[in-house]
Length: 453
Ligand SMILES: *Cc1c(COP(=O)(O)O)cnc(C)c1O
Image (cartoon, rainbow, N blue to C red; front, side):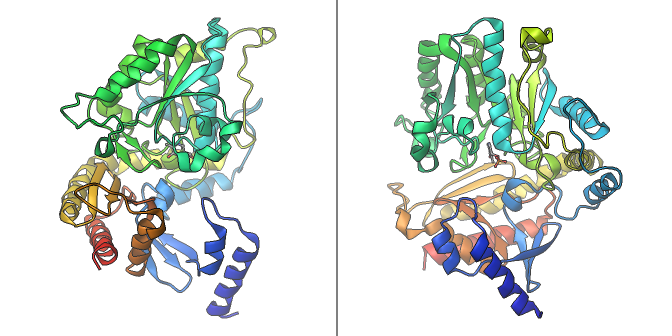
């Protein structure tokens, strides 16, 4: 089969048998998909040999680039020994070694690693741990959770119950458990009608009202530290995260930090909590954990929480939860190699200069006629496009402005994906300054081409 007919064959199979995530399949089948076959560093290659910059790190996971030799080698050598054995009743070196490494780099006090295989399950586990913790402590009324408006914690039902994105979550509401919502620290569109910084973080006062009123029934509060990702790259103002932690402590509510997106260097530090010296009770990790290689997640708990679950088997204090592929060897081997590369290549140190370059490049776009707000935390960026810059009026849904900009970027050799009217830029941490400048140049051109035609 020549390459054209092989490509057509793949497209046919896809359109006949595949159901894509977060995708309107009617539109999908009317368009011709990009078929990716290879990757290298910051680039993806399609079937015809065209290379594209991977501007969203293959949905926020790629850290040191594609085909990173150290991670390739680690996975290959693990394959030569064994690919999977269970953690139920057995253990293995990669799971134990990685757990030790994770607790070493995690914020202080987090000492126990519970594995699963995706971000949503890491959140489910965090919620269930927090819930059971209070049951075991005898404070059986503490069963509910607080979440932020615009938050995204995954797509399983527990995670959706603490999700704050109406568009994704509303339809499932009859299936969800009741939770309490506090305002999103979305300064560009403050839902409390305030202006930063003169508001002096008024949203924290609103949060406190809820905590004060319901704390007797609160098991925990879940938050994406520093940056609400899928909700539209909403960056919280300085002091907000610390303020939330202070409230959790004051009202005896566990803090669950969902660092599925922000973890592993994304915001410029290994974990976003470090920016405000916050130590959560539970930390949820996934996306970047294997450097973007294999599905793996970890929920890291404090010793205090872990100890509450200890007892004789007949006391039934056991955490009855687990996934079949928990702590898979290949995934753990990839994760260990990923962390070793951070150390060996001084990834975080080298990242700082690139964050500044990115900031400077983004600044050039702030003058654009339809760029309303640019939000950046390290290598996590959202560019919010608006119909009217003065009134901050949104583009209507039917304009499909985000998708059109991303499509224009693709034609110029860059893969990015929008969140509604927000253009997301999340390059691999390993991207070179030159590649980074191409990325921002193409993004700028695509925004101009579509919004200022
Ligand atoms: C992506 C994401 C999740 C869900 O992770 P999956 O692996 O897609 O289940 C949860 N929380 C945050 C903050 C995320 O960005």
